[in-house]
Length: 201
Length: 180
Image: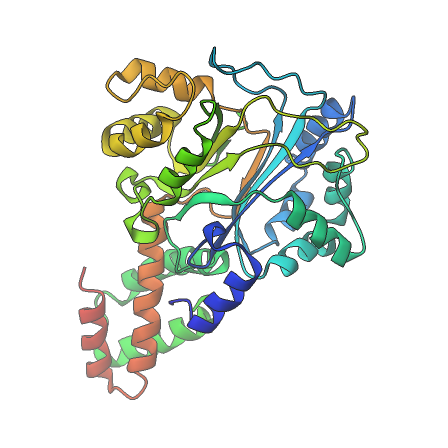
């Protein structure tokens, strides 16, 4: 389903245009990690990935295609004329590909996984937890704008992708069942199938 | 292996930009065709990709009382791709060499796409290990996602179009819609 002009306008109004590709939006943030918190942050992320209940809640953020958190301990050195970096902090980079409204995206994290937000962002400087307005202003300030952004399926939201993949699985079974059906049985089967998968259409 | 996410791979690199070349690099990257004309279409296995110029770290404080200052500007490259890193790097080298050379010729120590080993070594050397990747559809390849979206579109069209069809008409419309 194509993005309507109205939707595109609405998304564009909230995110710099270079951060968008169709429905997809890029977010790129970097926060300094508080001193001596790198190990704790790494441990928190390692544990999070191994708690199915927490990951299940993270997957409830259904507007995310792909996202990642990365601890940058040093900047790669390629020799002169690059000058070696001497930064006092390590950095947490957050790189996300999502769809929808920028403010709703930020607020949803605090609604769905508030404990994870504390586990992660409590270890960095520059993160405002509340109120939402101040938090969003701060994220705006921290956000980098992409110079080039690409999505392989710009017409689709993350939810549409999930639905389509689920539909594909079920459609295979439907096709096999209906292979030799006469028209009357086929019509009955098709109507039943459409009703069953309505949520994914 | 933190870079791995189901069948997908989360690659990212921070590469120092040559002194005084940041603006020129920005102009090159921002002039690249986007959407269905993006060079990443030719690479094939890329779900999402971005180039971001990091001119300086953003001041968040205080705290910290003394903000960090970078000595160089950096080019951040992040991509979510199918399969392993090696084929992805090779696809960048062989499918879009003119784009990689136009972009990375503004970066320190870039060896170019002519030599396979040098190019791979450079992008590996500048790679930053991902700590925590996640995706709700990291188990599906780009082709699988596109096929699924196309199937969904055709099914929606058929369901709408065929509401008043008789049984034989519906079956025929279905066969035409899903002939492949």
